[in-house]
Length: 486
Image 1 (cartoon, rainbow, N blue to C red):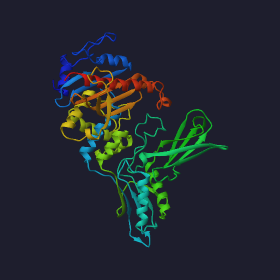
Image 2: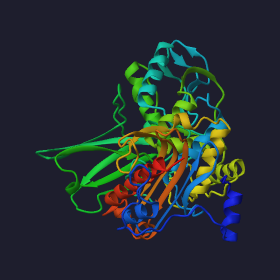
Image 3: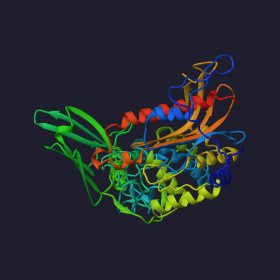
Image 4: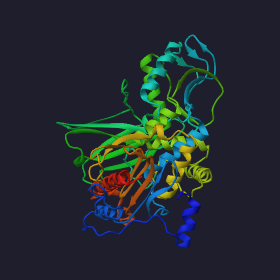
């Protein structure tokens, strides 16, 4: 049987015999396979043992033929979480090209005379999601090497290459670093480093834009330690600044964490000003602009190519990278419109019916079925779109499937996805028997997720244990599929 979305819908409507899950009782002994080996546990029992509540849906197919091997709730649309980044990666590859690079520039609106720019100096962003403080430090050194000591006009920061978005998902806690703002100027994944240490007279705090080689202090993000228990953090933003407070009872003796930046263009501009000053180039306080002035490029910095950016995004699941790439690929003026543009592209390109509300999967409103994800992965693979080589690869040891070679590693190349009481895994598995599998597994307990108050969404009670069981289920299902006869 070859799996297509049209076949699936027709089969469901007609009541045709679809690949079903056996309903064997949990306590029944495993039947013996030829040679006396126990057959792998049936999928329904594995789902029951996981005790996740809510819904579990999966599809596994032969990657060479497209034939469905096993499925459950194949057409059920559930939150993809970060597996949505696989769709975003395909979208960016097709719209931007694998060799695309982002360029950040320093542009002078007039000539350089006696070390002074006769006009304005403009820090020009292109939406690069990977720009770091170290890159800005190198740009500052190149500016000084070009003989620039200052400007007669203004220091401008252009961020109009991408729309200004204050946060990816408004439902997230204000202080989580994985939910930053976006703009055409991004820095350090739009996070600022907050560090504290308790002394005899209270806490000393620092806010900086650290990277590997440079650690410039930041003044646009401020922190005040307040004597209270809850809330742990509060945030207020005003005219390019981020003002935070933190509860003293939550800090302990010393520590640090990354906080999101809500004004990334101001952040980036200030950090470059500090680094330029250290090199001997003095710049006035930056002014933000969204219209690019004409001028001559003095210094430019290029990102890695898109394929490497995507490889890192899929490995580390960086939300800002996914959103910036999706926005750059669509050219849309808002995140909602950009996600809609990508959804229409994916549905037309692969013949699916996904409903994606962002590019990273951070929001809980997006929906995709395992059938549609498998369809997209199969189509992308056959079209040579190059996703499989940049997905993260792991070895999954078969521990209990009844294979002839227990412990034989199964190569899994996939994207994970995690939200509160949502877990997904989608990609490819290569068992030792030579079969090439493509699969998608989604687990979601909507009632537990919806019951979480905002203050519990960063570390919900029961969340880590639920996630552990979901990931164990995903591993056991893959072990099962690897052990099924070809």
